[in-house]
Structure formats: structure tokens, C-alpha cells
Amino acid sequence: MLTSIYIIAIIAEGMSGALAAGRRNMDIFGVGVIAFITALGGGTIRDILLGNFPVSWTQHPIYIYLTISAGLLTIVIARFMHHLHKLFLLLDAMGLIAFTIIGCNVALELEYNMAVVVMAGMITGIFGGILRDILCQRVPVVFRHELYASVSLLVALLYLQLNALGIQQDINLVASFAFGLSLRLAALYWHWSLPTFCYEPDRWK
Image 1 (tube, one colour):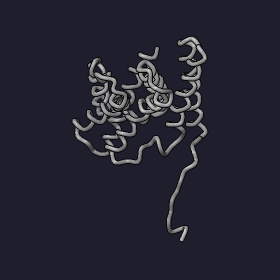
Image 2 (cartoon, helix red, strand yellow):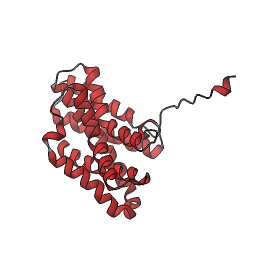
Image 3 (cartoon, helix red, strand yellow):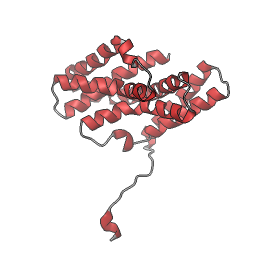
């Protein structure tokens, strides 16, 4: 199940990267690069930081074809994309959770400390979007809108806690996924967000 969701997620993330590139009027090469980085950047950064070589997508070339093709397909169907906004939000939420759990599993297999495992899950979940926004010269969305990075954090913590309690893997996966998806969709619906910090020096003079 997780692998299937992962494939759907990297396609959706590739398309979101292409849309971001389109908003910056990038050429076809730029669209392909941004799509690839958005979909697979988080896992790449995770593997580099953890010393997990070879990097995962290099062993699965199909992921390269899927993400770049998704980005190029977005150019063709861009005029219809606004009709798919809600579907994209759902797929993005599923991808966030799938990436987070996959990242945790990679770090667990490498026997890292629990704090590192949590960070590995979060990096996998959110860093592709951060790289996308930086390359498109935007403040990363994950730091500005409804609960996103914090959902990744809570999913990672729940997944590891259930794992430590000896909960069967499939049950743990379903429980963590259901929790994360419910929380993310609730945050979107009710516009939940963390408090923001606004520093304006002139106010304190």
C-alpha cells in the first residue's frame, strides 16, 4: 500500500512542481527539473544526510521517468488544473504522510537515534516542497500556511510510538496514515495553523 501511495505522491508532487515553475515562466527544461526536485528532493537530502547510498531513486529509474513525465504532462493539461485543486490537496496530504513514514523506516533500518529518525521522516516529507519554493524564489509554503510540517512531525512521533509498543506493522501503518490524513484535511478545512512571528523593529522604538 505504501509503495502505491508513494508512486501516486511523487506524480502529484511532480505536477505541483511544474505548476510552480509555470508561475515563474520557466522553459520546458526548468519545468522538468523543478518537477523532479519537488518529487524526489526530500528523499535525496535524507539519504545524503544519513549516508544511505546509493540514493534511493538511482536504484529505481522509473521514478525519474514518472516525475519528469508528470511535469511535462502538466504543461499540456495546465488549463484544466484549477478543476483538480481539491484532488491535489488530498494527494499532497497522502504524499506527505507516505514520505514521512518511508523516511522514518529508512532511518530505523540504519539504526539511528529516535530524534534522527523523526528528522529523517520530516525531511523526506517536506524538503521537496522547500527546495521547489526556494528555486522558484518563494518563502516555502510549509512555513506559511495550514499545519503541514507539524503534521509530518506528529505522524513520525505516532508511528515510532506505536512501533515501540510492538503494534503490528500493518496496523501501525493504517493508524498513522489515518491520523495524519485526518489532521491535515482538518487543518485545511478549518484553516488551522501555528502562531506566526512578526518582527517589526520600528514597533519597539
